[in-house]
Length: 197
Length: 197
Image (cartoon, rainbow over all chains, first blue to last red; front, side):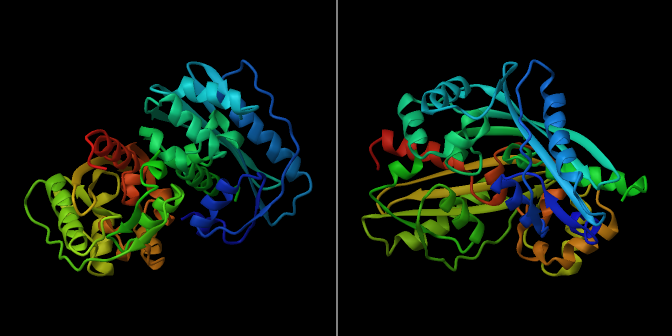
């Protein structure tokens, strides 16, 4: 299990996301947060490659000053609708635009992770398909009033009020929350097997 | 949204499950817990019908003494593997047996809900397909040591250590946690539309 593999390390989470920290807590992993100030520009590149690159940049910034007993976890989550990447909305108007675009449609959530020590790192990604219910303008307005959409990629949070708008998902739920738990475990297992942990 | 539809009611949760209460909290629904002592015998009947029947029995017991301003939520969750219903394991040996059976396989989680007031009720169910990773005996032993499997239908919890064993799901995540949020919202909307709320 994950906590067993990491038991000899001090875990550092290179992310300010309270949701990622919460997921690690569910796995009994205590983590110290060290946030990097790497910018995450959205480009035309393949979304999975972008997510992994952003995670890798966060990882590299934090690992420069990491101790040998520290295990660093970096992640980046991207929402993709019809080839368009939806970042965090700039304001309420953009949140409304994003939610109207998601309404009644299926989109993909991709999380890239980059994890390891100051000596070895491994990157991976996971993608999950999410089906949104058709939302009325009143529902969108009410949802924006909760403020939940404003600080989240794609303008929704699956673990809060947003849960009532999701009719179906295919893949890893935690990936949509921001951290692909199973993929992380598989990555740890592969690092252990190849002797880099 | 759910909290808007229920805003004039006092919500009563006819379940002792901390996970169901947690899901309601995510939706900003404060609930009072009133547990019924209805037995939930497993029979050969269709699992979805059983889950709804169990939820209905819990609902009816609590609604007998409910006030007119109270909205009651009852739910029952069932894990089905190859037509066999896996309840809560009796002991560690049965938890090990369940986890070995789930390992490397796909199973279905069905939640039945019965919700409403002392005057009107509606039942529904949701089913989600869950794919389990292949687990080693060591992983199963370590997982049982966490005690998480012992009080859960199917001997695992998707929102805890169990998350690392789930490779994929299809459907509603919250349904696997014990409460199908989207289906509940749709049920509320239909009750409102037909004037029973």
